Amino acid sequence: MLTEAISFEMAYRFFETLDKIKISTSLIKMAKFNGTKTTITAYNSLSAMYTDLVNYRFIDVCAHGDIWYISSFQSQSVLYGFTTLYTGTDIIGAYTLYYGKDSDQNRNLTYQTSLKTQKATIDSLIRQYRTNYLGVNKSYVYGIYSPCYAEAGWSEGTGYLADMRIKVKDYRNLYTI
Image 1: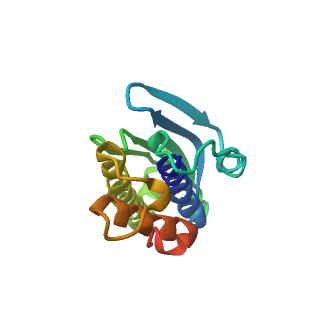
Image 2: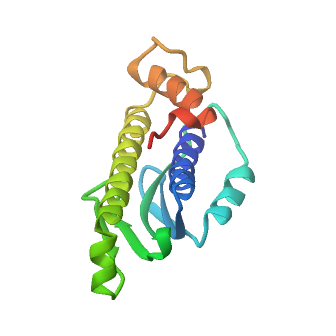
């Protein structure tokens, strides 16, 4: 269940980072792939996702488990009294970020730089998330000898999982703004 825990916490840390830059998430759709089928779980807030994260029970820490990934999300920013809605879709596939502007055209012109900066920040965080996800997914798909004893140097997958364990626990190094 190591891959399962790391992939879920990686996604949680992504949304936590958005929250730190004043972009609150109102809908999170997480996909869970078990090797044959995908199931979607929706969270209405970051705190609901956190509740699942802290209540997560490991059946076998030496098994890979399933792999979680962000399917889509809806977020909102109200910086400077200017509301912007963001919708990210197909995060690990053909990622697209849609954003809605205020109906006041003058306000849109005034806050255009802020809007571009926020969009660029979200895009950057998504790129970092995708890089991290693809590494965990690679070790999930190809498997490793034992995730329980993942020692760097045994294979590319074990080294990557060992690194991700450290990064996820000390999540300040997981995403950079």
